[in-house]
Image 1 (tube, rainbow, N blue to C red):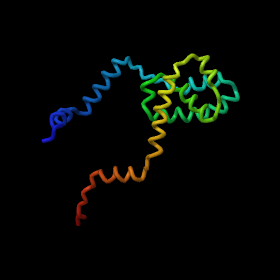
Image 2: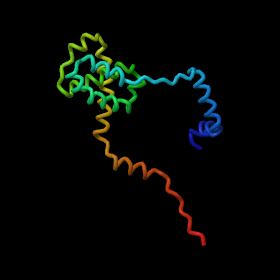
Image 3: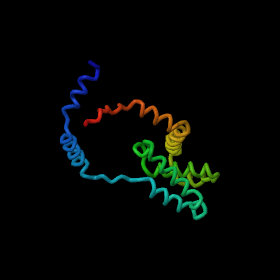
Image 4: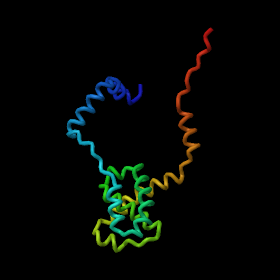
Length: 153
C-alpha cells in the first residue's frame, strides 16, 4: 500500500454529479459573477495617452507581451491595469523609448511593475531552454501503451 491510499479511496467516492453539484454551489456563492477583467483595455487607454507616435510603436509589442503574460499566473496575482503598465514598460525598454517621465506622472508603484516584469521574463527564460521534441518524447515514453489483441477470425 502506498502512503496515498487514504486519499485515493476518498477521491474514488466522487462522481461527476458530485463535481457538477460543487460547481453549482461555487457559482451560487459567486452570485454567478464570472466577469474577468483583462489588461487589454487599460493597455489601449495607456498607449492612447502616450500619443500617436508612441502608440503605434509600443502597442503591438506590448499587446504580444500581454498575450504571453496570460501563460503565467500574473493575471491571478495583480490587477489588470498593473499588468498593462508592466507590459508597456517592457515594450518601451525593448524599443528604446524613454517613458520614465510618463510613469512618474502616473505615480504608480514601480516595484509592482518590476515584479510583474520579472514573472513574464521568467516565462521567456523557460521558453528559451524548452526543447519541445525532447519534452514530448519524455511524456510519450511515460504514457501507458495500448494492449494489442490478436485479430479474431
